[in-house]
Length: 82
Image (cartoon, rainbow, N blue to C red; front, side):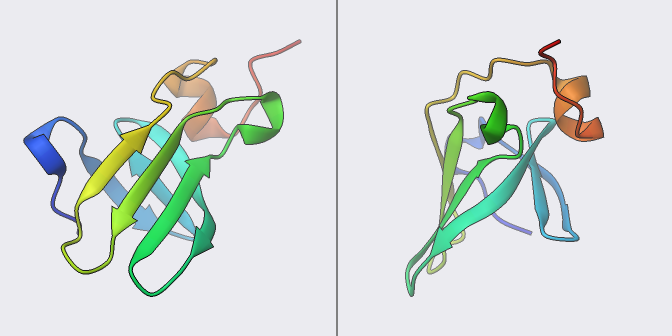
């Protein structure tokens, strides 16, 4: 598991290519030697939420925290737009 910066964001689990942060599902966007850049799994629905994991310290930093969907939609993988 990852330690969390300021204990504000917590990762619930990481499996099958998904990382759950605060109940929202994230997928790996890009990665390099020091960082892994995650994007909300609902990025195709224009959700701009992003997270960065520092691979040296295993800390999580949130970027663009605002999601445009509910947590239920994020975990189930359904789009909230009709």
